[in-house]
Length: 201
Image 1: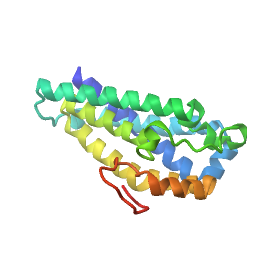
Image 2 (image 1 turned 90 degrees about the vertical axis):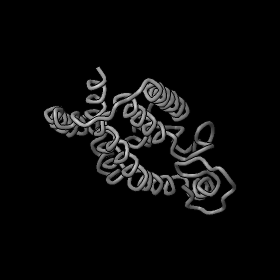
Image 3 (image 1 turned 120 degrees about the horizontal axis):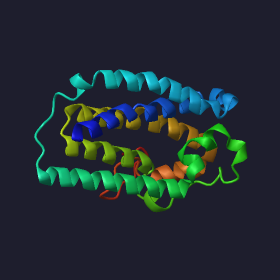
């Protein structure tokens, strides 16, 4: 059962970086093709998911022994990640959550409103934190090493690539308002003390 859970996580994970990196790298192109973007990303993801499934014997063979307390912690992380993701989706709206506002910016009357409340008052990118919680939680529940490696890869891609591309676009859209927001709120890790540097983590 846990291996099936791990495999589903491994298969589903690539669709997020596939979609977000391309969307932020070439926004003008994706806006031209509009809603067809979703079909393109789906067609890109399907062969990747198929390859992962075909390699399941290799990907799932290495695991560590998980005790009940570790599983419980993992469940809490997954549930916490889902709740956090739902919270951010509620604040941003479903259109922004699925990238529609990036594809059709002229269709969104609230596109110029920067969300800075709720989890966005703690970190600038809580959605990525939610993803990390879910994947790390899955790792602790299943004990599958490949899921743990995926959690690390997901964090590195999100932190050093996707968030940077997203912030560049947000600065273009919101200007000084977003730069002031950067000064006040950390990027990914909640602050524990008082910091004054702009590029806080």
